[in-house]
Each structure stands twice: as structure tokens, then as C-alpha cells.
Image (cartoon, rainbow, N blue to C red; front, top):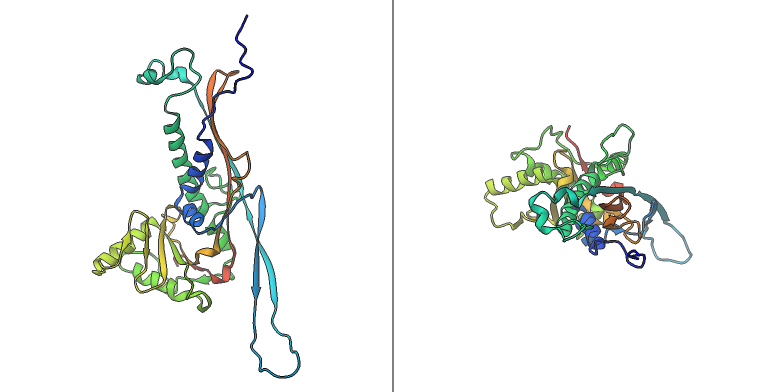
Length: 311
């Protein structure tokens, strides 16, 4: 006689879906885009952003019909990278340590602190995705496995440099507390007239640049301007532009300005592949952790985007 457990499922972390969302949208850039509705879901490999553009010419009203103007459809493609994280966790390794008090009696088929481990993994993945969303590069010369899964905004914007607007109008060679206010103003002044009155204008900078800017504001005695340091966001004084500090641009000395609606993130989430689980492998007598997901970036209108690079 023996136990028949074929009708029972192996252990699975019931918070798997929640942790996937935490990993994808725990990143600052991704959370900003998600809040603005700039995340395109259901992207399993590549998907087009469909863009509509139309020009209009006013004419003197009179008899006859004189058509003018063109309505143009174009596309830019979001290509997502497929990624996974896997780890083996053997509960027996913990039996001789203080964690033994947290292991269930008998033959262990689960590890203690599953939720804490999952949350830690989610935070780590979010940090890696934040960097990849800006610094990702699928070129074969990039051997960093954390940034070579999909192309980030930096590469995509640089590839469209013939259309984007140069933001370093003073040929600055460094960003300091002494010049950062002027450099941000230069980006603001470089916004094309067509978008200058938009209600979603942003300038993305690294957290290091953001801190230099807030230090400069403090030194200028501009204390009456509210600075949400916890969120790394502030409204640039006397403008309709929000400055956003993101970890993915830290250390790069890059800054990008434009409409928030110009930036897109692609992911799947609707797919069962994008899951997060911790399960007991009976064949291997071990607990296994696995997370799989997809992510990618794209911009929609390069000629409305200001790109800053040091001279």
C-alpha cells in the first residue's frame, strides 16, 4: 500500500500574479508609464504602434472644391525581450540553521519565508528592468545579460537622432549644481512649439541629475516650490513641465524631454507564460523558483523629443 497523491497539485505560490506585476511595474519608469496608460499589453514578440498624422491648410472660402493636406498612417514597432529568473531552493539546507524553526514538521516540501523571498525577487527584478528600459541594447557586443534582452529608450532615441531635437545647446561637457538649472531650461526651451502647451510634458533625468537640480533650487532659495523627493518628481518652476528622476538614467548624463505620451512600454501579462511561482519538484526533492516575463520600449514621435547628450 502507498499514498496516492495524484489528485493533489504540488505547492504553488498563490501570489504569483501579484509578484509579476510588482516586478514589472515596481520600476520607476514603468510605473510612470503605467499610470499614464502608456503600457501596451499582449505583446508576445513584436507589435506596431499605429500613428496617425494629418496636416490642415486654411483656404479662402469660395465656389469650387480645392482639396489640400495629407492624412498619414505610420508605425513604430515595440519588440519585447523574453526573460526568466530561476533558482533552486533546498529546504534541507536550512535544517541545521536557525531557520529550522520555520520549516514545517516532516519532510519539507516548501521553504520558509516564501512571500518575503518573492517580494525580494520582485524588487531586484524591478531594479534590473529600470536600468534595461533606458540602457538596454541587443547588440552582440553587449554581453551584459541584464541589459541585452531588449533595446531601451537610449538606443531607440539615438537611432532616431536625425529626427530628434538636440538638447545640449551650449555644448556642456558636464552636469553640475552650477549649470544644471540652465541645462534643464535649455531642454525646456527646445520643445517644439507644437507641443509646448501640452499637459503631459516631462523631462526624464537620472536620480543623480535630479538631486543636483534640487540642490540648485535650494541654493537659489526657491523653497516655495514643492519637491516630492520620495517620488523623485517635481514641477519645474514657472513651467508646465514635470522633472522625473529615474534610476535607469543614473550615471549616464543623459536627459530626455517631450510628451509622456511619446514613451511606450510593451509587455505581455495576458500570457500564462508570464507567471511567478515557487513549487516543489518531487522528482528532484527541491523547491524551485521561476519567473518569466516580457518587456520592451518604444517612442512614437521622434521629432517631438528633445535628447540631451554631453558634448
